[in-house]
Image (cartoon, rainbow over all chains, first blue to last red; front, top):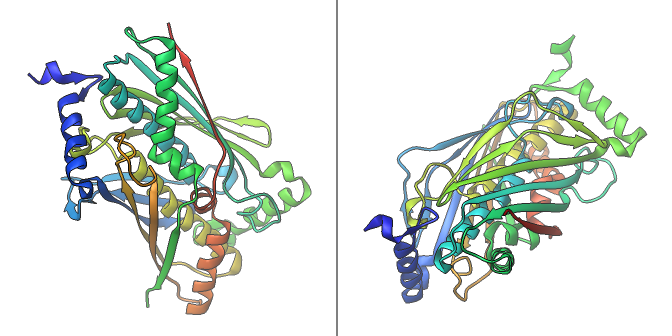
Length: 187
Length: 187
């Protein structure tokens, strides 16, 4: 049965059941995600992503995902991992792809290829303590490529627009998020 | 000599030289970073981060960093990697740490410990096509911990504020970025 309800590798029955569960109880839609990092030296950090909270209950993954963060030599690093702003771009491509193939599955659209090239402009003057433009990305550009054996170009373009309207990462980058930061001093 | 000019693993002479180079030619501050992703199946994507553009010139890393993206089972994935919004949180912790230790190095502050716990709230109703709050994070909270043998609590807290004012990732999340997205249909 499982293969009958899977499209694009997405279990469509489970997707419909999830939407139904959220309609019945909006609390089922509530997630708190987490990431922690430990500084090693210079620009090098080790990141860990493991547990999250769903509908008020902790969800434990069996193992943590570990990520390396660093800077390239031109930004005084040792090039042992991507830098933080590169991770933002990666996240946008991942988010777009998941949104695209899930919604395609729900609409009966088969996806056979889906790629994203993401790039963003940053001026490091503010980071370096000099007068300059904003510290973060001044612009981000995404170029996607998709192939489908059973959808029209119009359907595929319309889905691209829909995914932008509903993408958690695009919304997080395109609209302001309130961020609160506290620092504890260890003695 | 190198050990004399390194603090927190940061080459302070190179940092000062970099700031001087940018003051002389603001074009040296300009970067375009990139990330690409290839969809595999369901929520699974493979990401690649390799080259970037600095001061108008391409910079090639010898090897690409490869990242796995996926969703946990409750979001219809197979849990083979962190999801996209978790990567955003990881990026914020990495960015804060780099900003903190670089600026601490420039100020003569030794850092012996630096950790960040980042969490953010997301409601997936909009992602699932239902009426709900914004698609992205409604709030992000960061709790940092730092230890230094030669700085006062006031200096360490002030540096935390300074880092927030100059963080590329915080600015990217706290203020809107123009994002343009195009889709090419492969035939």
